[in-house]
Image 1 (cartoon, helix red, strand yellow):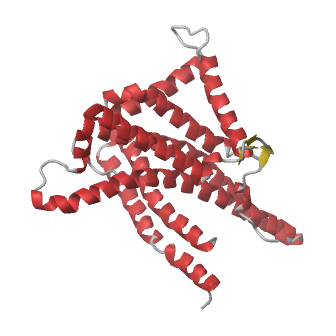
Image 2 (tube, rainbow over the protein chains, first blue to last red; image 1 turned 90 degrees about the horizontal axis):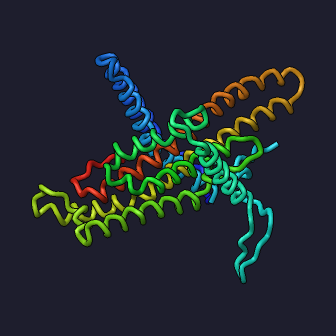
Length: 74
Length: 254
């Protein structure tokens, strides 16, 4: 196959790890709801930690997106 | 008509300047950097005039920002990192202004270029290394050999630790750059969808409400992300400073 087709295919394959990112975000969400339900008085700290961890996990997803962009546009 | 999500990141020159052979033109990116610095510094200086003991609203807001960042630095960087507080406050305001001013119409996000975020991240990591070397001398390199590890694991562990340390500025830069670039690209693509629907004419124009509603939601999310990414950049700076100042066995929080 020619180069342009391979590039599109590579970009599509590069986005497959986003399933892992989605699962990770879901796990963070479920742990947050459990933690808040067990200890409602600590919900401020739990929310803060939750937002922080979401940012870490989303960064991984964005690395995959960046790699796909590089493959598409160069 | 084709949707072109990437042309919004083009750097346009406003005023050409030449320093010998180099072309150091004043671009739209530089204009927004100047605007961001003037706005944030001007706001803080103006809020500090006629400082009263019981602060009014403007001064109260500036003090709230100051207190919040001092709390973050003290909690994540340790008390020694407070000496570098001006640097951390500047980094936070620069990144936040970059993200926030880019959300204004017809504006440009200077943090959506890898060169700007990489320069910031390299500056941060250079500061961390220099602070560690000044404080601990060559004992700073004991950061890569955590205590309590048996000797035969060391030849494997030390290169892993070094590589993970060197990956820090890259992850810092890429996180901010990709968040900003991807966010603005999504906004542009949905705007293109709206225009596509409207250009079809007739009853299809009512279908433009769907990408428009999604775009409103994504814009709200982008405002939140702009503040969050500035906060995360600052937080990581404080964590790396803590690792350099207190050479405890650090827990990886990537």
